[in-house]
Amino acid sequence: MEIIVKYSGDFEQFISGLEDIGVFRPVDLGQGFAVLDISADMISVLEALPLVEDIELPKSVFLNNSVTPPVSCPGLPDFRRSLYSGAGVLVGIIDTGVDYTNREFLLPDGRTRIAAIWDQSAQGTPPPGFFEGAEYSREKIDSALLSADPFSVIPRTDISGHGTAVAGIAAGNTTGAAYASELIVVRVRSASGEDEKTTQLMKALRYVITKAAQLQKPAAINISYGMNQGSHRGDSLFESYISAVSREWKTTIVIPTGNEGGAGHHYEGRLSNGEELDIGFFTAKGIDSFYLSMWKNYTDIISAELFLPDGKSTGVINRYTTNTNAVADGLSVTSVFGQPSARSVFQEIFYDIRPAGGTIPQALWTLRLRAESIVDGHFDIWLPTIEQVTADTYFTDPGDTLTMTIPSTAAGIIRVAGFDSRTGAAAAFSGRGTRCPGEVLPDVSAPAVNVAAPSLSGGFDSLSGTSFASPAVTGYAAQLMQWGIVCGNSKFMYGERVKAELRLAAQRSRDINYPDPSLGYGRIF
Image (cartoon, rainbow, N blue to C red; front, side, top):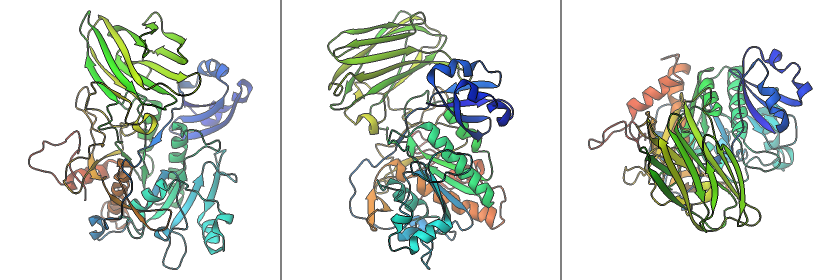
């Protein structure tokens, strides 16, 4: 299994001798982070090593995908009026790959605008420092384009079309803001076809930033993935790594806030001393797993008890009974009463529910919380994202704040919400931020409803979802970086400086107080 490790000192010193405890294929991610292959029974041995600072298991991440069916293309976006094209700036696309044969990514003479592709699931030669997938250079892509059968030279690197759409919105010849940028593309996918993991995104980021530094070109990078498993406070190793590498090289990282705004997957509450609170939620028909991830202040002493749809209890968990496994009615329920980490004073109470066979029943469940000793009392609970459990899984009384998905909650990135260009209002599905406890807000918002994007058919679709809002901002960031770095107007136009310029340029309405939990500092384009 893969794990994320934060270590101290030199990488070579850190990995020396690790093979003796069953560690293989170590990948140095920089900034003191690494991904290791290790057997589960040896993790405790790894934890005891002097240079190991922290360990985190990988989690599944999901595309912030289209939330409405495609309709006919409504036309080109207005941001094409810009005088800048992203020339001299790399656009990184960490997604489902790209259709490299699509004319949106070709020069007028038929050569590619793509500097490199890393397909993490392909068989071939991986990039230096990595152990999976195949890397395809510009020369290899051009060779494939000259072939009568390009896909016999380089196999298809995008099956779903999501990555092609995202790349086209950011940097397509027709639809992209950065239509003169070169692209670096990573297809995030395991060879086994399992869910994409946080470790794969971390390796993809390391690859893009390393490649950009080698080419000595600034990079605007788009990551249209998200999940709900975590505190949403930017304190996981996954989020910490993204924040750390956002300060490397001349890098700007752009991430959408997700499609959880109206999903009903977040519950926010506050407990008082002695209070008992029942929280209801429905599960959809046909799902094969789900989880609850609750986060509270460690100083608050509470217990939790989950009741199955037929009223059976899975048992009480608290600071004394920290882990339970229950099997009833064909369901397996694992619960963990977690502890604060070296990075966070907050405590997770986690439930993982899976059927022994078949699927989870469509039904009403109840989580009961009992408050014993309360100092703060505030808590948050998240269900999986809509892409995992559909819109028919939801809390009976959900909250409407902090529905941004991880890793849009990381620091050092540009957080992009979505709005409807027809009305100027925030899209109903767009992830919302919060000011309490702690400010976690979008930076800007971009069109997320009926966005024109290239399709695998060679034509154009009109797509909706925050996946298709963030690449527009990625393209606009590349334009700013061209103006600043390439043209010499501001040599340090990347990272937080680009964020500040985007916030300043955003359009604001007189009847809204900014920064707004739905729109951030305003609308771009």
